Image (cartoon, rainbow, N blue to C red; front, side):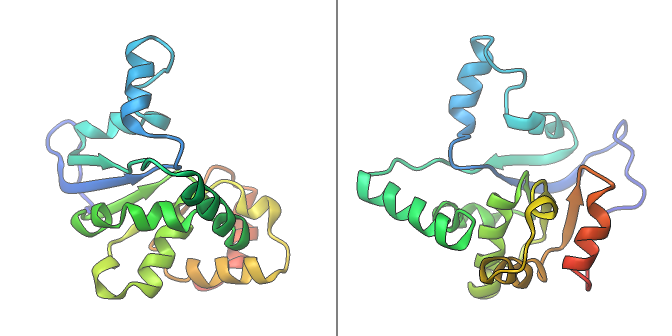
Length: 173
């Protein structure tokens, strides 16, 4: 994004959208923080990035009926990620400059929108992978994940041990 960024002197003029897991609504999380039940005001400490960028917005956990929850969970079980949560938050994806995720469950839904949603979902996505390298076995579901991840702009991992596995899974990244 920039090569001469100095956190002490300026901020990036970026509108960042943080796409969190369906059960991590930032408003509810902030209430936990205010009550002393959470360590940060946003999940995973994303609130600390607020000083570095123009704005941060977060995904919303939409209210669900019994049938919509069952549908979301069924689709998630079939494809291996929460596509409906990403679809419900698609407007925030459109209005951001860059998207930041925490796990595969979040970024794979966004990559599906990017792959199949036309030009309106072409924002760069920071794809942080936590579990994929640990559980990647040949399957139709994992072929879909590989296909979607071919559009990943940035792939991060928390472990050096995962890098060779991810290079094998994603040879073009």
